[in-house]
Image (cartoon, rainbow, N blue to C red):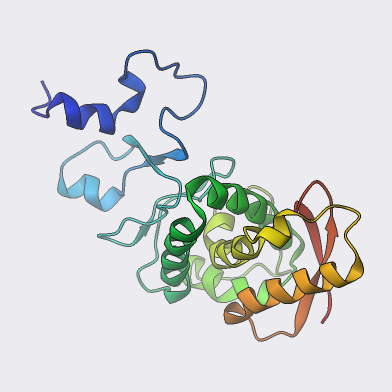
Length: 225
């Protein structure tokens, strides 16, 4: 019917594999559901809302540089053309390097934590100068308060460089071992690590205050460096 071999279809539609429960999560480890790139769909006369499973680290269409969706399943977003946004393109390359260095599962875990934190920053206007150029490039305007409303589909895109930079720190062994009893020296080191990896997206000399609990899971606010 499709003209494709069973081998190709099994990988393209893993939900159809024998024994797969479609309600229990991804049938492939650390994969997420993505709507196919709208430009690829147009070239192939395909259904523009077709869904495919992709490795969690693939957030851009490699051919058209279209943002396909956020790096974690808990966040939702639309597709955006980001070919003219070098920060996003660099973040995607850095995301790939994180996977090669730490493995897919460890990177996905760190990205999930980091995305929660950077979404918190966006909602409260923390470090907003990093996101303003990206918001303006995609929407043609900036929020008056610098805050992005909760659930806004632009959030995963404009926070992606910060999310990847923060995930780089959270994936480090000493960060994963942090608990609520961590001493001040280790907290200061974590703050320095975070600012080092976020430095390329801001000129402001500010650093997040980390209140750690349950590993490196953190809520961050801004304080002077």
